[in-house]
Length: 364
Image (cartoon, rainbow, N blue to C red; front, side, top):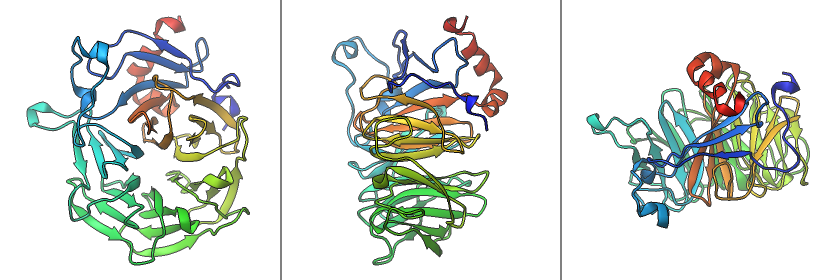
C-alpha cells in the first residue's frame, strides 16, 4: 500500500468546510471534502443522523430556535458505539439504555419506521450498552458494561444469546466479529484483555494482560477486525496506542504514543478498517480521526472540536462498512456523522456518485 493514497492535510487538525444552503429533512446539504480541491478527493461528508428528528420537515420556526429533539423513543441522547447491516445503522445509547436501529430508507408504504429501539425490554434488556457489532446474517451483538454481559439479538430484536456468567467479565466494552471464523472478540476494559467466543457463545481463548509491553493493555476500549486478513486491531486507550494481532491473538505490531503530533494520541477510543486495510482511530480528547496505513504511517487526519458538520465533541465509536462508508459517533453532540472513503472499490460500485463528486464546481 503506498503512502500517496492520501494527501496529508496541514498540521492543524481541522476539516475544510464548504457550506451550502440547508434543507429538510435534516440531512444538510454541506460539502466537506478531504483533502481540499484541487487534490483528488479521498474523504467526503455524507450526512448526519440524530434519530427521528433527522426525518422530519423543518418549519419556519425551527430555523430560528434550532432543532427540538424528541423523547427517549425519538432521538439519540448519549450515543457510544455504532455498527451497520445493509440499510440499518445500529447505535448504542448509554443514557437511554437501548440500541437505536436507524433505517434511512424505510418504506412508509410498508409502514416501516425510520427509527426503532432494541434491547429496551426484557428479555435482553440493556443497562449500559457500549460496543456493538453485526454478523453476516444481520444478528446484532451488544456489550453491556453494567450487566457484565454480551447480548445477541436477531433482526427482529429478539434475544438469541446472552454471554456472561458471574465473574466472566469485569467491564466488557468493545466488540468485533470475524465473519469467516464466526468469532467474536470482546474487549474487557477492566480485565485488560480480549476474550474470544464463537457466535454461539462458546468461550475459545483470551489474550492480553495489564502492562505496557507488546500484547499487553492498559484499559483497552474497542476493537475492529480486518475481514480480509483476519487481523484484530485493539485500541489500547491508556497506553495511547493501538495494537494489531492475528486472528488467534498473536501480537503483530503497535502504533502510537502520548503527545499532540500526528501519530500521537490522548484518549483513543473507536477504531475501524476500510477495504484497503487503512485503520481509522477516533480520539475523544482531540476530537479527531487519524487514518493509518498497514505500516503505521499517518495518511490523513480530520475533525476538531465543535458542533458544525465535520467537527466533534467527545467522539467515541467508529465503524467502516463494506462500501467504505465511515460512521462516527459524535457523542456529546448526540449524533452519528457519516463520511465516504473514495476507494477504488467504492468508485467501481458507485460510478455515478463518483462522477457527481468530481463534477462539483470546486473541482473544475
